[in-house]
Length: 282
Image 1 (tube, rainbow, N blue to C red):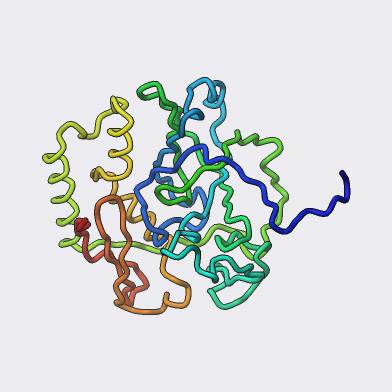
Image 2: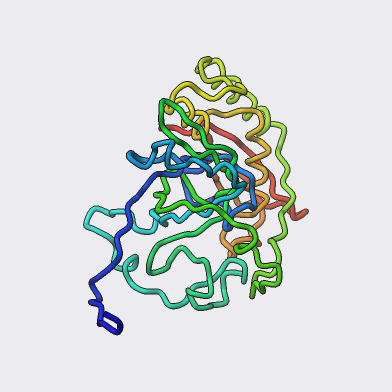
């Protein structure tokens, strides 16, 4: 009934239809907005939503809307959620404003919002059908590995793209930093690529689709290839460091990418330099 009072405890529950599988397993390093880095990833659909019939016609669209959940904000800490994770935060400090100025949470895309929901437009590279299951190969996502997916819809340019739209405190894309890599770090990277190729010859990069879902996900999430150095540089060029620490010279920061930890630091020249690439100890 119109005007009916809704209980404060009442909430809408949406099913998790899939999970995002990506090279980035931690929030640090993830792009702050979609389409800043053309990083390839996969949406692995859950049954029964992985039936290929559900995606007939989707490949006619170049981009899709993805609704997803900020799951790392609400991880179980052993005794349930921390109180701070449950409280409503009416204001946030966007990195775009230097991390100091506060604005309303609903005037931002902050992850700390009541619904814990994210919304992204990403490029649909293709719909892959592997072992009878539909998987969406996408690029440009700002989601990390294992992000729960709530919904998928086609992006329709004539109604979704508004050329005259105003973008408030973020009128243009952020300026990318210049990224360099030391000779020793590059040598470490090359060694790790070759080690991975010799250790898993069955998963060497090919132009054909992997025969199993497990092989496809391994390729996306773990298998290091020569082209990954460009992806690593592009991610670091977005400067994932906290805004209040961006002035710190020669202070190492570590970004986990696939199976490696990448250390980088700010130089006096203003460049961000990759200083080491080491295998993750699991």
